[in-house]
Amino acid sequence: MVSQRLEIVIEKLSNAQFAEYLGEPFQLHLEPELALTLELIEVTPLGRRKLGEDEQSIRQEPFSLLFRGPLEMELPQRIYPLEHSKLGRLDIFLVPVARQQDGMRYEAIFT
Image 1 (cartoon, helix red, strand yellow):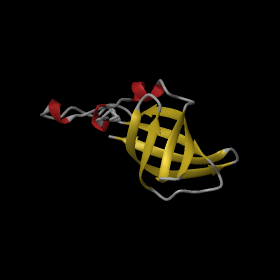
Image 2 (image 1 turned 120 degrees about the vertical axis):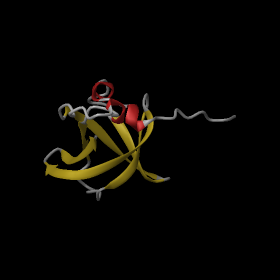
Image 3 (image 1 turned 90 degrees about the horizontal axis):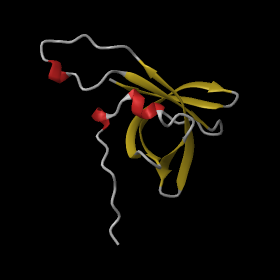
C-alpha cells in the first residue's frame, strides 16, 4: 500500500487557514520515536505589505502563529516538522519566545 502525502506549499498558506485550527494539536517530531504536542493558541495578522512595482512578488500577507508546548522541554529555534490531522506535514521555523505557567510559547512568522 502506498501512502499518499498531501504536499503543502507554505507560501500559499494564510492566517485565515490557520485560524480554522486554533486550539488544535500539532505533532512536532524530534526523532522517529519522540514527538511533542504543540497547541496552536494564536494567529495574528501582521499588517499588509506595501505593493511594489511587481505585485506578483507578494506571496502572502504576513502573519504569526503562537504555539503552546510542554514546560519540560525548551526547544531551540530551528525548523521543525509539524503535523496536523487536516493540514498534513509542515516544516516551520519555530522560535521560543516565553516560558509561562501553562507551557512554553513558540512563534512562527510568515512573511
